[in-house]
Length: 518
Image (tube, rainbow, N blue to C red):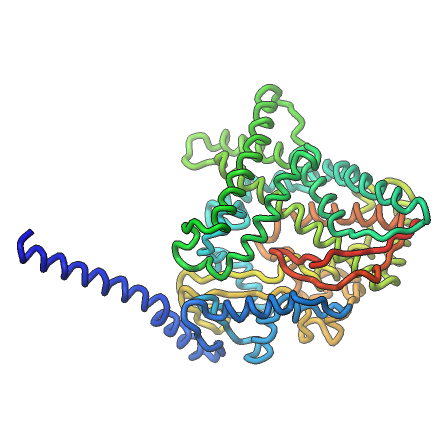
C-alpha cells in the first residue's frame, strides 16, 4: 500500500469514528435535549435528564424499596406499585414527563386524551425497542397496522359469545375440581387456612389448557412454569433492554431467556402438530377449543384469499398466538380472582350480598351461562376490583411521526404512558371515595360510573380492547359463584398485603385465606 493509500485509509477511519461519535452524541444528548425543549415549550414539566439511563435507576430503586416490606391493609396501592410515577406526578403535576432511558415519556391522564390515544391506534402505536420482548410474548397484542387487523380478524371467531358458551363446561369442570379439593380440606373441623394464589394459578392454567387446547393442566404446566420464569427475566431486563445490542451478549439471563423461548416453542409446536393431524383426518373434528377455532378460522382465511399474498397465519405466528393464550388467559383471570377474594375478605358485607345473589340465581345447582350473565352484584364487585387492582398498571404508546394530541404537538419519538392504576383512583374523576371499595358506583353500569368518560379501562379500550375480556370475566364469575355457594372466607392473620407487579399485579407473599364450610 502506497503512502497516499495509507493516508486515505486513516482519513476514512477518522471519518468513521467521527460519524459514530456524532450518532452516539445525537442519541444520548442532542436528540433528548431537543425533545425536552419541544415539550417544555408547551408547558410540560420534564424531570432533569440523566445521561443514557434517564430515570430508570431511580424508578428501579424506588420499586425495590417498595417491594421490601408489606403495606397497610388498604386499597391505596399506588405508592407500592408505581412509586416513581406517583412521586413524579405529585411533584410536577399530571402534565409532566420523565425519562425512559434517552426518551421522554409523557403522562396521559385526561380522559379525552386517553380516548384519542386508544382510538387512534395507528397513530399512537405500541412502543418498539425492548429487545427482550420477542423472547417473552408476541402475537396480536403487539402487532400494528394490517398485520394486527389480519390476526384480529382470524382470532375474532374464536372469542364470539356463542363459541364462549361452549367453553362454560370447561370452566365448570376445572372450578369444580378446585372447590371439591377445598371441601376435603375443611371437612375435619369446618375451616382451614389456604394460600389461594397458587390455587387460582392452577385453576386458570387448567381452564386455559382445557378451553384453549382441549388438554389437561398436566400437559400445559411446563409451559406455564417456563412463561412465569420468562416474565421474571423480562422485568429484570428493563435496565438494559434499550441499550442497542445488549440482548446479543452471552450473559446468564440472555442465555436462559433464549433457552426458554426455544423450549416453549417446541412444546407448542408439538400440541399444534397433533391438532392439525387430527383435523386432516377428520374434517368434522371437535373444534370447540380456542386452538381448534383458530386453526379453522385460519384455514378459512387462506381458502377465501388463496389468490392473494401473505394471507393467513404462518405456523410461527400460530405459536405466538398460543403463547399469548397461555400467558394472558392464565394471568388476567388468576389476578382478578385473587384480588376479588382478598377484597371480599376485607369487606364481608359485600361477600354476604354476593353470596345471597348467587344462591338466589342458582341455589346449590351448577351455574350456567345465562345465570352467570344475570349476576348483577357479582359484576359490580368484579368491576370495582378491576378499578382498584387492574391487571396491568399502565399502557404505553409512542409517536412515530409528528402528532397532534388535544392542544399538544408531539414530536416523533415521544413516548406516552397511561397509568391505569392512577387514573382509576383519580379523585377528580371518581370522587373523594376513589381509594375506597364501593361496588355500588357500578350499580347502573360502567357508562354511568365513568360519566361516559374513558376513565375505566382494565382491559384497554377502543379497537384494541383485550379480545379475551369476555372469556376472563365468564371464567371468574363461574369460579366465584362456586366458591360462594360452598364457603365463607376471611383473611388469615398470616396474610401480608403486598401487591406488586410481575407484568401483571401479583400478591407478593401469596393470599392466605381462612375458608369456612357453609
